[in-house]
Image (cartoon, rainbow, N blue to C red; front, top):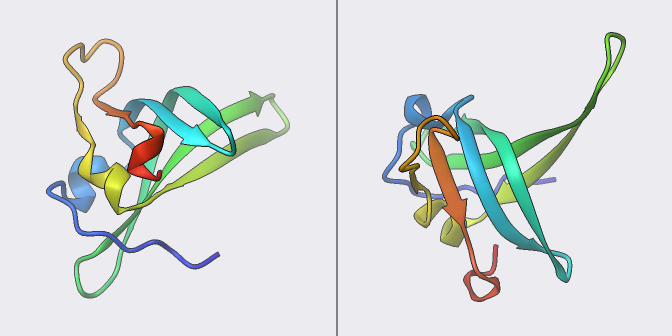
Length: 98
């Protein structure tokens, strides 16, 4: 899958591997929980932002689900008011086309 390159007020260093509480529309439902940002940066400085959610971990295996975040979602990233919950939050509505 081709990365969705976006412009962001946040840098790679600010987001990479940081925790995020999220609520995003996905396939006629809403997905929510706590995940971790996975970020790539291209030579032009654009970011491809994904949220990684650990669905199942055992001593022998790990299953992650990745949600690719388009520009509207990247624009909605903000610092979380309760840092004990997560470092960032991303709450989107279906109209934001995430």
